[in-house]
Amino acid sequence: MSYDHVLLPSGVASTPAEVDAYLATQQGQPETADIAALAQELNARNDELPESDSFLSVSPLGGAATGAALQVPSPYDAIGFVRELLFRLATPRDYAIYDPQLTWLIDPAGHIPVTVTHGGAGEFPYLTETLATTWVRELADPNPYLIVERASEVYIQTYRESADDYTVEYRDGGPERHFAARVTGPDAVADLIWDWTRQDRTRLDRLPWERMEL
Image: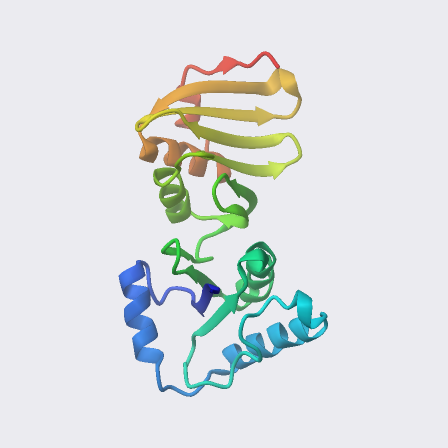
């Protein structure tokens, strides 16, 4: 069984249903130059490795009539490696990554480069307002946390305590600049995280922050 990621142009869809509809329109269409280049690069990276370390479940990729989309199947133990590689190759070309298993569309439109650690899904290289909302709403046990890091010791994070209760913390350097507050509702938390990411402190400064003793 493989884990799939799908590459598609940024902006062509905004929901999983729209992704499915777009992919249907691409079936039978000639492979675009961007997709051919992405497939070639992925094949070349995979061919550098011993067969036992292959990160592709199907090789070679590309050459099919799938228009401006490319399905990238990989073994489950290669998910993190493949995702990181796809971001490095696809984002500069303004391509989004769709994860059909999680029904997440990770589109770089309007993104801010930060390191995002999702407790259930690993690391991501950027955040958007849409992703902040999606990821906070879907935080679930056993690791219901999200961390957004701008630099070493400069980050904001949240932990889902119950269905509607969250702890939000931010750190602005050393331990004396580490604060926490309780926030109700996933969308309020997502708004605060996105505000912090784009360095807007208007709503953050309204909260009764308490300094953490670490």
